[in-house]
Image 1 (cartoon, rainbow, N blue to C red):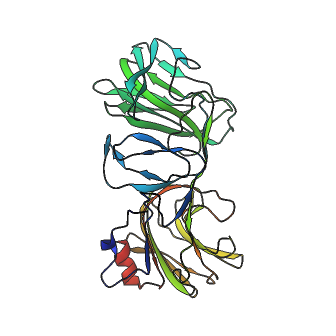
Image 2 (cartoon, helix red, strand yellow; image 1 turned 90 degrees about the horizontal axis):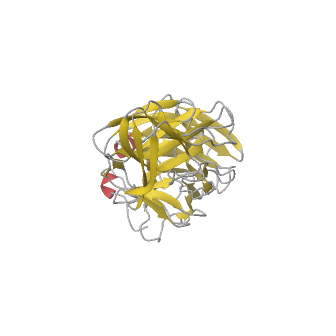
Image 3 (cartoon, one colour; image 1 turned 180 degrees about the vertical axis):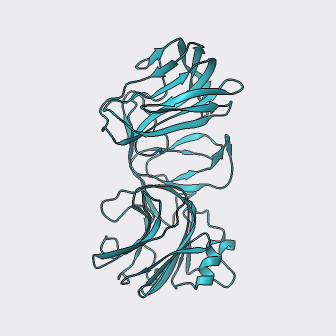
Amino acid sequence: MAVKPNLALIPSGVKASTVYSVLPSDGVGDFDFSRSGSATRINKDGLIETVASNVPRLNYPLIDGVVQGCPSLLLEPSRTNLIPQSETFLAGWSKINGVVVSDEKEISPDGTLNASKLVFDGTNNGRIERAISGLTQGADYTVSVYARVASGTQEVIFGSFEEAPFTLTTEWQRLTRTQAENDTVAYPRLRCNDAATIEIYGFQLEQGYPTSYIKTQGSIVTRLADSCNQTPPSGIIGQTEGTVYFELNNVKDKDIPEISIDDNSNNNRIVVYREAINKYWGIFTSSSGSGSLTNSTTTGDNGKFAISYSSSNFSLYRNGVEIVTHSGSLPISLTNIRLNGRATNDQYGSKEYSNLKIYNTRLSNSELQALTS
């Protein structure tokens, strides 16, 4: 991982025992990364790009079709695109009320000629849709598609069981709609009540919140989970005190660790996590299998964080403010940093890391405030 974090972020007078990059660029890494199978990312040119098995995904922020800022390491759980043909719409899709489909007529968000064109004649409730069976009734599903209008702006209605209006422009944007399905069959659809020419690419239906695009070509496809962890050299992770600083973006999860300092098991660990319902941040500790936790009342998805520990005292800072103090027994034999999941039962949410530092001392409160501001 040749790309290193910005050391200027370390406050004056504070020295990290070790600084680890979470932005791999040349395959030589500070962290062990694995994923069986390919996956997609947004590359430095703002295009959807497929990367090979076991290649980390550096995902670039895209705003109004333009890359803005530096990349982050994207980590996601396993997901399945339930739509068996995500990029062509002639076969298997219903074309209703005056809509005509032409496949592979436009340049798509991946930079090739594989986007489809939909021509609506102005008939009310013109649409394309496809029945997808085998869903779990009552569970949350997300339908998504990339879309733009040939000129000007255009309102469309998009969704499945529940639909919502979206305003298209000439820039590609990803429309997403998450809802609890009321049946075992879903009808992903895009509707337009006006005469308009609309381009689309990459239809996806997945259980849960939206994740990165999964291409299908005739059958459903599952993207397997990313795994990222590291066992630093002996002495780097302090056994009686320490601090881990990290930056998070685009957090999407359900009661699952964002970062874990552990002994390569679930018996001894210090965990920072975000609670799913209220989005509260918290600290969980387990010592010899006996666990305890403390939640904050602070919500939010992104930020600069530092988890600091010594003896039986634990503290979590976010964006310059202490949001959790936790008391519990200090876990023993801490040897490993895990950026997603657990040592066993490896399920976790989606997130992007852009920085990480390890200190083998418990930084002072003023240092933690400065570090995370």
